[in-house]
Amino acid sequence: MTIEGTATEAELLAAVTDLGSALRELVGTAVTTTVPAAELRSAAVAVRQVTARLSAARRSRDQLPALDDPGQARRVFNPVSGVGNPLAPPLVIRREDDAVVTEVALGLAYEGPPSYVHGGISALMMDQLLGSAAIAAGLWGMTVRLELDYRRPVPLETALVLRAAVRESAGRRTTVSGTIALAAAPDQPLVEARGVFVTPRPEQAAAYYSAITDASGRPTPPGRPGDATAVVEQPGATG
Image 1 (cartoon, rainbow, N blue to C red):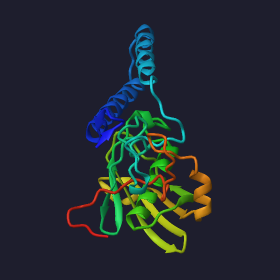
Image 2 (cartoon, rainbow, N blue to C red):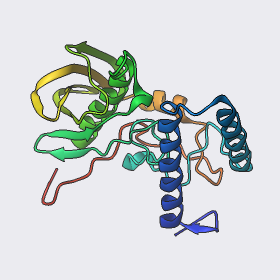
Image 3 (cartoon, rainbow, N blue to C red):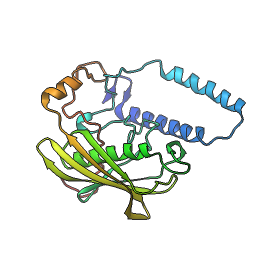
């Protein structure tokens, strides 16, 4: 398969992943560097030059990236799991029994209180994981409620484990819960989350996404337009 007649899908994905990784390294370094002001100004000039190069061709808000497939929960620039997004850690979410799980250690780019993860980042990650748990269970919807209990601060640069599972599903409404814990103490939650996801009615989805096009500009309203992330299946997993 070729993308816009210039590269195979695998080649484009590799390039997007490489750039995302490089930018992630840049962000991480930018918030920890202690070089002099002159060096910072020089770096800013160089970064703006690269930005100008990348701005030569850009998609609009309503245009899906060439690599995205919302129906398959593939979102390459998702801010939590997208390999091409420098904001993303990125999380790799996998199925484990009746739950979904991921591990991560967050750097200082995600700092809130000194040496701890910003509470909004915890909420962002849990919203993503809860939605992925719904997708893994064959369900989907948009977040209508997200509640978090912050039991203890979440440390930076420390191995964490995030887990989520569907608790109830009725009609268009799905309830999911999840936790963030230290990988060394997975049964002692630092953060507990509960989310409610509702599948839009067909006419709602049509109204929300009628302007969406694919990468070539053809109208492509997604049938399941969520922001959840595809789940990596374990060998032998079913369902």
